[in-house]
Image (cartoon, rainbow, N blue to C red):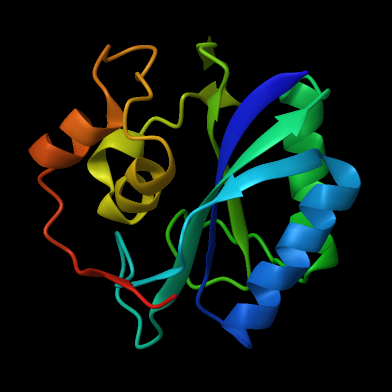
Length: 161
């Protein structure tokens, strides 16, 4: 079994339901959720929107390979109504990102692990530090807590529950 960290985000529709439905899909298709951060409300990152995001990070135990994990995530997103546009940053019903997969480093066009922008985004680092502050980034060789301390992202990340 492998330990993975997933980032979930939503800013369209019933955001709470979207997160709950994603959790259900993850439990059914990917594996056991070992730990979950609090839910945070955050500003959109990389684009403008009137709708704030709800974000959460979860720690999951899975038997899926990285590529099979990506396939399962894309299927869950599709089932929940995610429509992918050509625009990388946009409002969305659900977004599930693979942040880390064990200490693996994968750099393929369709899959990059660890997530290449993990260390630049407070909406990922804050919940990740909440559940695993001493986890070491496999490329940058720094803990998540130290990456959060040095993060230049100034956006507000507010715990709501």
